[in-house]
Length: 394
Image (cartoon, rainbow, N blue to C red):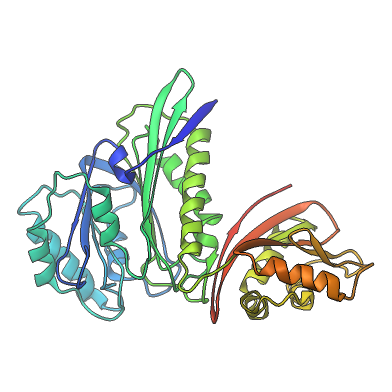
């Protein structure tokens, strides 16, 4: 048994880490350079983009031996250091060589976001490093340093109280608002904990958590070259419970992913596509994601058009086992299609249209075959669209 409590001030809740951010000249206003530092080398688990052209920071990370430990992550926005070849990796090494003359570095990591195709301005970065306070603990400063088109900061922290066993904490920061696809997103996410968790569990639980949160987010079908999710543990609490850690890690990544949905560029509505009664979990997921990614469905949401034909057509085209005589479709609690109501009369059309005017609602598609269920969450963006898929099994 355990209890969780939401905390303020993000990363500042995690003992053993330091963070700060400054403006180094990449942005006109606001921070664009920051760091996360630990007072000793710690385990790090990471998941990166599936793009076949990973950016220089990812290539730099992957040169380290398996299961290496680190004590420093340097973060920057406005320049992705992507498609810059070996020169981009070398630039990172040169920056860390300069920084290593000021503070002790152990396998330092860099993570970048911004414009693709330009090498880092090493002069600006090294000058910016002079203004960072490496003993500071300012979560707001570092989360602002990674924001690009984000309209609000994405930062969370929870305390987990294990009955008669003590407490540990998990906190995270994230950036992302556009160019998002179901293979992470145009995002950076850094999760810190003081839980006494083994590296094997870190790898396992992070991978599982990302599958149903960041790895199921879609906007425009593009996959960035820089997508990164990292989990680091100081182990300072001396406390750990695998199930509790798993549950709260899933909670944090899901909440952050929903923040990405809400912060989608131009978003006005958040919609749940709930597919239930499918043959199995895979088919439920397939249909829900097909609905979330359909251009016809996207435009219907934007235009507040209750045409159930777009929904039914997309389900049929998804390739899952289905039968029009068993299918039913609801907009919230308004039935718009079933075997007995195949034509949308004016009354139900009006009720469905009223539902679609709301800032959030649910489109439920009951396949009527078995019991598996999966929900995809999305928001309208006019000509763009965001969806986040979260697994809900019956």
